[in-house]
Image (cartoon, rainbow, N blue to C red; front, side, top):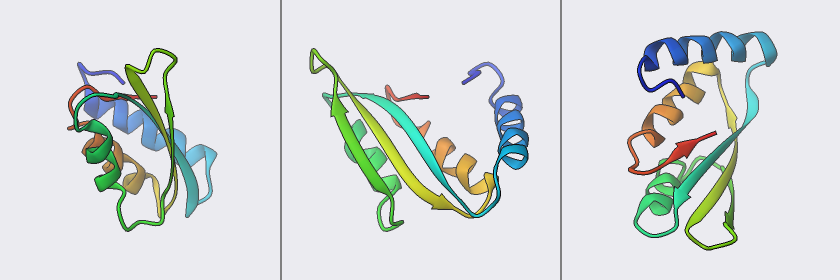
Length: 95
């Protein structure tokens, strides 16, 4: 993500999502989080009670965990809302 201009990044993402998907649609989020700390639990809580399917995979050295989260979303704005919420989690990398 372009951390210097997040509004521009999200605007481009919204346009891309509108052009490439029919809504509602299942969206796949991918994040990398330090294995130590509360990041994994924080992200899981953001997607609690949404019907999301969460798959966790630890890195080879165990320092990081990748999270793949599939969830049916109503529209591109809903997708971006979740990215913004996860962006508040310390140390998370959105892919």
